[in-house]
Length: 112
Image 1 (tube, rainbow, N blue to C red):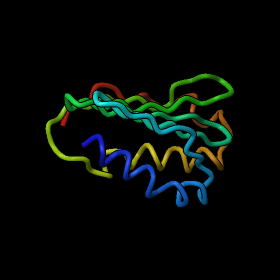
Image 2 (image 1 turned 30 degrees about the horizontal axis):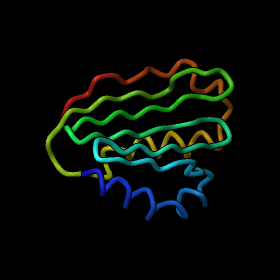
Image 3 (image 1 turned 135 degrees about the vertical axis):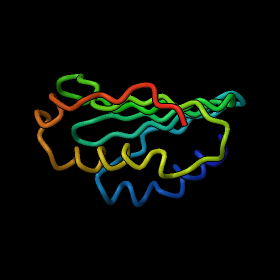
């Protein structure tokens, strides 16, 4: 699963860039992988670890408000739909003012 996140991040760099999402960093070792993204208004991180846990987070830069957080614990394969809402929020953040996110609920501790 760790290799699939790296492949996904590398395969989608140009697509994300065309949508205003810059892939800032891809880090991996034998225990985990994380990918950092940035837009003009938000920063995001996806972390996969070898034990099957995934954390997804987006923070609005100006206010430092956490607009998305999700924690998943599963033993299945990598699925792009797992991080679909993460990408949609980042794309949306390239076109929105930060105040849109201040009243959004924060998603927490989702298990699949």
